[in-house]
Image (cartoon, rainbow over all chains, first blue to last red; front, side, top):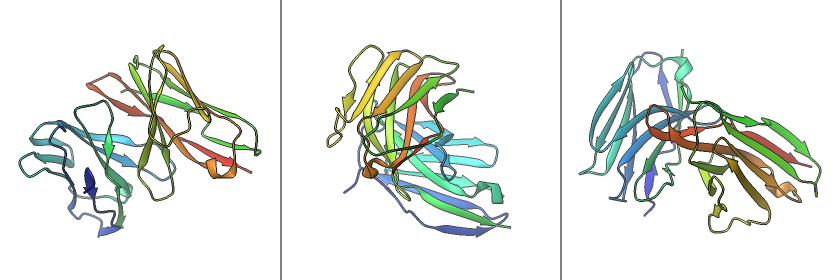
Amino acid sequence: QKEVEQDPGPLSVPEGAIVSLNCTYSNSAFQYFMWYRQYSRKGPELLMYTYSSGNKEDGRFTAQVDKSSKYISLFIRDSQPSDSATYLCAMQGGSEKLVFGKGTKLTVNP
Amino acid sequence: GAVVSQHPSRVICKSGTSVKIECRSLDFQATTMFWYRQFPKQSLMLMATSNEGSKATYEQGVEKDKFLINHASLTLSTLTVTSAHPEDSSFYICSARGWTEYYGYTFGSGTRLTVV
């Protein structure tokens, strides 16, 4: 079993839809959970950062962490064509290394 | 916000030559820097971790003599691909960890290396 599992998609939604992206993990040592957005041929850009379990909201984005289920989610409300990108979950705990999911490619159609 | 500058963004070199990629944290001090490689439609693969003034720690399977990493200061790390071959063509990304809004990871914009 991989440490972090993420459905690579692709995921295609109409503009204005609510998008749900998810990752599961197996390492109980993970304490910090991040979501990055990566446009083609660019470096990842941090969207959300969460410590331990709980919810965090920032504008149209909401991150949820359920440590008991080892499951994290990112919700995007009122999705826009500019949200079209690859979304990577990343986790850290026990060492300095970030462990990434494979990334989910999202396309928001106008 | 935190910014990591990575140069060059794109480089083409001849087989057998060496290429240096530079990564700078512009507005914070990076206690640790990371170098990744990313293949098309794949996630980031960690190559090595470096701390200022120390030797880099390479991941299993990464040739340390081929991918030379120097972390000369708290704001600068370089990756040199030595004797490059076409199979080294890839997208290389650096990341710097330090105190910004949180003790987190900021990524550079990446370098696309093409070896011909």
